[in-house]
Length: 392
Picture 1: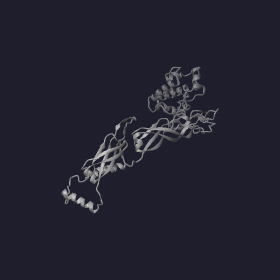
Picture 2: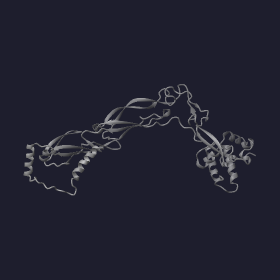
Picture 3: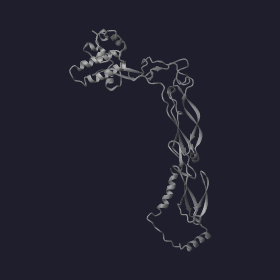
Picture 4: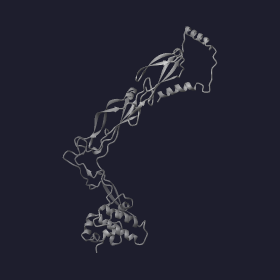
């Protein structure tokens, strides 16, 4: 009398392969000898294993549906008593598949093939800009050398009129299996097919232009829009302008990284700018006006009488645009002008006499130094700060 394999797994006769597999996994977890030590559990596990082996094989399942028993007709097998409980079943792969949901033997499926069409890689290009270009933004034509889709085969990799063929080594599965015996029975392992590299198919007549890769190297010119306010190290993303993937897959992105040139007058600190204006000692004492060339044009600055070394004058809004992460500008930074009072190092006799007369008039011939807790820390600290900007 034929066994009721559907009843053993608890599934209907019209159950799908996935329903049969889920039913087997559930029972295998409950009845496996390493988990269930109850009397009869081993025999029940063997019976469930045999049922799954039969119903997961289309040919054997057809025999069952016609009223036969494929195990009896084949002369026994694992269900005939004795022997290896995993023999003819596809090895430990399906047992591991039942417990962990992975792997897979002859009946379990396995990893399957991988697509020949893959996502392309991102590309990086560095672009040198002046401070003025960073401040105003610029459109720049750049030349890139990346992989592009092969126009001869449209990314397919095969010569015109031909198509990939099924791999003879793996039969189109993309993987090959090997069986080894262990104390648990037959252990089946799978690995990507070395001939087709897991694709399941082989390009027997490759395209002469790309050699079967579906892409070629090409040099092209594109226009990149650099927004106002960018700075050194910032990147502008050009979506879809990177490397085309193998098999003509979708391209990655192109990132343009800004390299900002050092400016001869200004030092940048984020959106703020700093510069130093040298003022003669006499001009600092008497007051004067100086003309400063800024990024926005010429600016007249007033040097107040008695201006001290390190005095700072801030020109609000005359720095760089403040660029947000979304690419929009929210205001501008400031321009910080630092006055450096220059003391003459060489005087002729007449100049020296005039200085002595000034010192006498101010009672400063024998000046007593004024010592504070900070010493000259304020002055040196300020100009050290300006110098430090130049080394960033």
